[in-house]
Amino acid sequence: MRNIKLNVAYDGTHYHGFQEQRGTGLATVQEELEACLERLTGHRTQVIGAGRTDAGVHARGQVVNFNAAGWPIPAQRIPLAVNGVLPGDIVVTEAQEVPPEFHARFSARAKTYRYSIWNARMPSPFHRLYSTFVPIPLDDRAIAAAASLLTGRHDFKCFQASGSTVRDTVREIYRAEVKREGSLVHFVFCGSGFLYNMVRIMAGTLVQVGMGRAKPEYVNQVLESRARVMAGPTLPPQGLCLERVDY
Image (tube, rainbow, N blue to C red; front, side, top):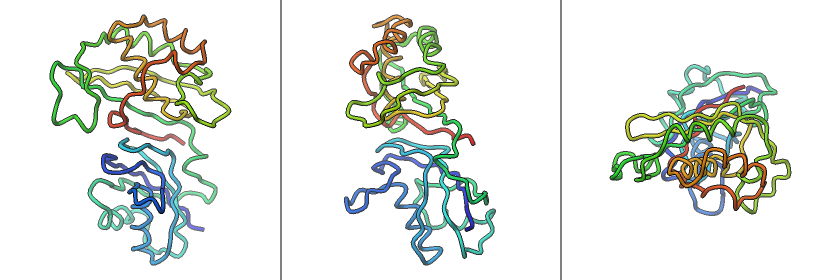
C-alpha cells in the first residue's frame, strides 16, 4: 500500500458537505476528489477525510488520505496533477507519502476551526459567503471572557445538535479565542474533537454574550445544564472554516 496524505482547501458554498452522498445527486467535496483521482489513476479510489464538514462550510486545512498503490507519480508532483483536474473551488495544497497506518480521521490529535462574524451596521457583499452578518456591536472583551470558560475538558452535550446519536459527549478544548480585524470578528477553537454543530452553537452562544444578552459566566451555567436549550442558536454554516488538523 502506498498511503498518500493530501492537504485540501475548498470553498464549500456549492457543496453539500465533505462526505459523499452517492445516489442523492448532491455534490460533495469527497466525490469531487474521488472522481479526480479516478481520472488520473484509471480506477476507483476512496479518500478518507479528517472532518465531515457540513453543507456550506469551508476548509483551509482539510486532510485526506488514500491508497495510491500502483500510482507512479512522486508525492511532490501530485498537487499539480490533481489541481489540473479539480474544479477551481477545491485545491490540493500539499501531498506527502505517509506510513500505511496513517488515517486522516483517527490519527488526528487536534482540529482548529474558525467562525467569522461580519460585525458592522451594513452587510458586506464580499464577505457574505464566508461570514455571518451581525449588525449589533459586539463586546470583544465579554466574548473573550466567555470563550475562556470553554477551555478544558468538559461534557459538551449542551453544544451538540439535537438528534445526534453520539454517546460520549466529553471533549477537550485547548484554545478558544476571539480576534477582530476591522469589522470581522473571528472565534477560533482548537480541540481534541468536536460534536455535530458544536462550533456553530458555541459561536452562537458567544454572540449572545457579545450582544449583552448574557454575562460571560453564563457559559458555565450552560455547561453545567448539559441541555441544548440553554445554549445559543446554531449559527449559519458559511461562517465556519476548518483551519487545520494536527497529527
